[in-house]
Length: 324
Length: 312
Image 1 (cartoon, each protein chain N blue to C red):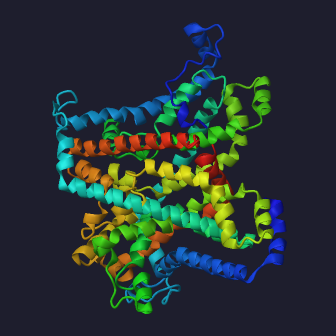
Image 2: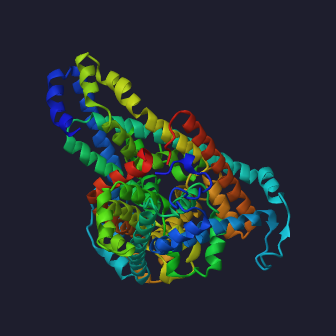
C-alpha cells in the first residue's frame, strides 16, 4: 500500500522504458492500451468528481450570485472569512464541533480498547464469537435507524432510559433528554460508542493475535495475575496500533460526522448540536449563501489537511510510517 | 494461534486462581450486559412494530407485543410511497454495488500491474483524493451542472469509485501468487479477458468485503436523496422516508403538535397506524436486510478492515 511518504510528484517510470524519453513512453503506452482503456475512464471520473469541485473554492472569494455567469462574479477577497471569524454563530459551531470531536475521540478510544481487552480475555471461543458478531451489528445500520432507536430509548414517555432511571430511583421524573442542550454532547458520545465500539475492536483484536502466546504462558508461570498480564503484555502489544489510530483521528478532528448531529438535533438543542457540517448545509443549501458556506467548508478542509500532515509527520518521527 | 487456543484452556484450568475466577465471572456478566444493550433497542422496536398502533401509545411495550398484529407491516407495504421507496433502495443497492465493485476492481487491477506505465500517476491521483474534498457546496454545484439532479444516477455515478476499496483490492491482487496472471497471459488471453476470467474469480474474497461495504453504504444513505432528489418522490428511498418521519416526530416534540397530521391523507389510516408504529415498522424493514447478511460475511470484513486499516 502506498504510504504517505510516496506522495511526491509522479516520477516518470524510467525503469520501464530502457530506450528512454517520451518516445519510449508512448511506445510502451500503446503496447499497454488495454490497460489504458481499463483505467483512464476512471481517471477522468476522478478528475471530474474529485478535482473539478476544487474550482468551486473560488466562490468563497466572491459575492456569488447564481444569476450571473461564472466569470462575472464580484471578487471580494477575504470578506467572507472575516465575517466567519467574527460571527458568534460560527464560533459556537466551532466550539460544538471541537467539543464533540474531543469527547468522541476519548470515549471511542477508551471504550474500544477496554472492550477489545475484555474480549481477548474470554476463554470460550464460541461465546466470544457470538458477542463479537452482535457487537458489530449497530455499525452496519444507518444513522437514520440508529437515531430512531436512540430517540425512542430517550423518549420522556416510556423511553427505556427514563424507565430504568426512575426504577432505580436516580431521577424523580422523566427527563426530556433531547430537549435540553446540555445533555447533547454526552448523548452523542454514548450513541457513537453504542454504534461503533464493537466495530472499532476489530483492529485491536487483530493486533492482539500477533502477540506471542508464549509470553502469556511465561508470565503466568512467573505468577503474574490477570491485570499484570494485560498491563505488561497485551497493552504494549497493541501500543503501535493505538498510536497510529490516535494520530489518524487527530487528523480527522474537524470531521465530527454530520448524520447523528443532524438527525438527533432539534430546535431545543440546536445551540449544542449544530456543528460545522450542519452550518455549511444551512447557509449553503437552505439559505443559498454559497460564498459563506464554501468559506466555512474550505476552512474545515484546509485545517484538516494541515492536521493530517502534521499527524503524518509525527507518525514518521515515531517510526510508524505506514498510515495508509 | 489456533494451537495456543486449543492448549490454553487446559493451562489456565490448572493455574486458575480465585481472583481469576472472579474476573472471568464479571467479564462474562459484562459481555451479557453489552449484548443486551446492543440488542434490546431492536427487540423493543420489533415488539412495537408487531403491536396494535393504538395500544402501543399506552406505553409499557418492552420485549413482547401485547396485542399482536401484522397491521403495521401491511400498511407499510400497501402505502405506495413507502413501497416504492423500498424498491428504489433495493435497486440502488444492487446496481450501485455491482457497478462500483466491478469498476473498483478493474482500476485496482491496472494499478497492481508493476509494468503499467501510468501506474504511479494513477495511484497518486487516487490516493491524493483521500486527503481533501471540494466539500458539500462545490459537489452540489457540480452535480447540478452535470444535470444529475432529479435522476436515479446521482445515487450511482458520483460515488462510483471508492478509493479505500481500490486500495484494499489492489493490495489483495498484489499478494496473489505471481505465476497465475503470467500463465493466463502466456495462454494468449487479452488484458480484459485475463481480468474477467482470472482476476475477478481470484478476487472473490476481497470482492465480498468491498461489496458488503458498498451495499451497506448504498442501502443506508439518505443524504444524497435529501440533497438532490427531495422534490421527486419517485426517487425517494426507504431511509429517507424514515428520516422524514423521524424529523417530524422530533419537530413535534418541539412544538407539541400532534404529528399524526402527517398521515391526514387517509382518515382510516389514523386509526390503523400511528407515526410511532410506522416508525418502528420502517426501522425494522430498513435494518432486517443488513441483519440477515452481515453475520455471514464477518470473516471477510474483518479481513478487509485489518488489510485496509493499518497493516498495509
